[in-house]
Image 1 (cartoon, rainbow, N blue to C red):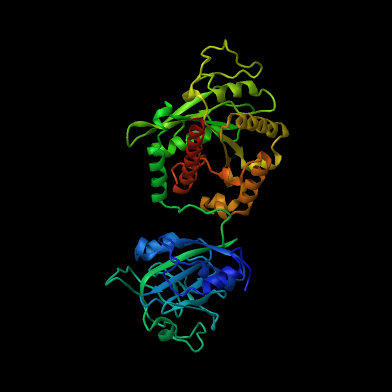
Image 2 (image 1 turned 90 degrees about the vertical axis):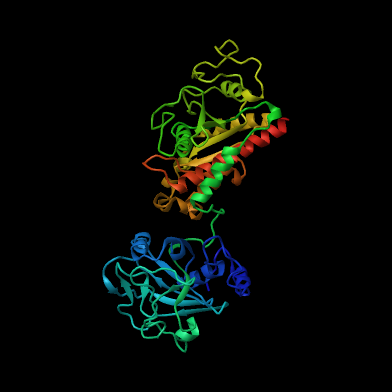
Length: 473
């Protein structure tokens, strides 16, 4: 048995739990001990991503292949109506053509027998043509068939093929057979296919559930957010601070796009030697479902540079609510009380309620010392004013290739974790206050996973604003 991050002690504890239904997680049945056992059989730390679930996606071979083809190694899990759980491992990618192929690393397995945890690896016996690649079939192994053509759920079960089921002709079942493994039938409550990914079996931070319902829930929280009425603050102010090119303006565009429902641009973004943002701008975001503005403003400002930089005195005026919307920064002179629009007696609604540092995750290791010092100087100003600070680490797709291919890998990526840890150490703030995000940049359509990360960050910023206002009151 290999050691995983969950640890052998937890594995032993999980083995003692025999009830198949005890640790169900949302709409996935694969348990912690199942994942650990699979990792043990595969001889390496792995984690598993659900690709296909017949009760959710339907019993169409075309749907199965659409969701699972060309993805990489997978495990297929059969949930028998008698609480027998068994399946098969494929080391190659599923394909829609090719007929019977040979996968010498393939094996079958059993997890549960009549609800009892009885893990059993069933290795290959004949190393030839043991897996079927065909567009009209679901996931099919020799000795473990699934379905051919479309299949419907009848009488609360999916009736799969039993042709050669655990006959031992290709996979060595030993003294076991279809009766002892599956009670002699292949009627299922569900069937799942998981992508097998190398890496820790446990994420370094608890990931969200990557579903549209999660995004809807986050948006509903933000939609209903309302500062306390007695404070006379109609909307909270969130100031974005970061080096030129870190993605401050892209954060504004990303959040606006999510609420608008399509890719949009509110603020200039892109690469430039100097900051494309030259003025202090408060952006309101509209909620199309209500036709009203949400109760926050994203406040963008000139990007930090080692030369032509924003004066710290200007940032102090921003925090205290002295500078008006559309104030234009002057790199060679700070604002004064004679600056047009200067607010001499700001109230709580004019102040900044939370500051968000936006840091490019792809160049954390080479961030100039001068920029780091300015961020720390700003943090000292925030401490003096009891203003919370949150950090967004952008461009995580450039930090890790796996995340570039699939944003949902963010909390399994060691590279992203190291980047978050580095930022936490450099800025000297808790790691829980450092959130990895990806702005909409190359995408032409919205994606749930990118939107969920952005909305989680916005929710946290609003909670910090709420903390600040409560402290002030």
